[in-house]
Amino acid sequence: MRSRLWGKINNNQLLKVMAEYLSADKKQEIFGQYGKSNTDTGSAESQIALFSYRIAHLTDHLRNNKKDFGTQRALLRLVGKRRRLLDYLKEKDIERYRQIIKALNLRK
Image (tube, rainbow, N blue to C red; front, side, top):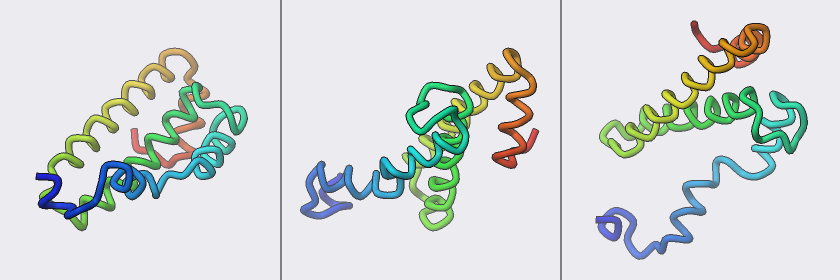
């Protein structure tokens, strides 16, 4: 099925095209803005910000490709991951939760 959709493209090229929107520089920028430093990949805030960026990208993709159900499933999984992280942060430190909600302009 992949060959029918992508023609003669190999897996490395496919991964490069799919990961093009999220370069290492963009990740460092997100981590620097919302985390403690550019290399802070583990804090809840930085992960929530990264998930939010990916969710926005996938949402835009689904507006153009309504029948891409694999991407739709991936989007729902990301939303669930972000929700669980937000719930965790809300339990641990309500002020950090409020800050990240305000900074990312998320509902709830």
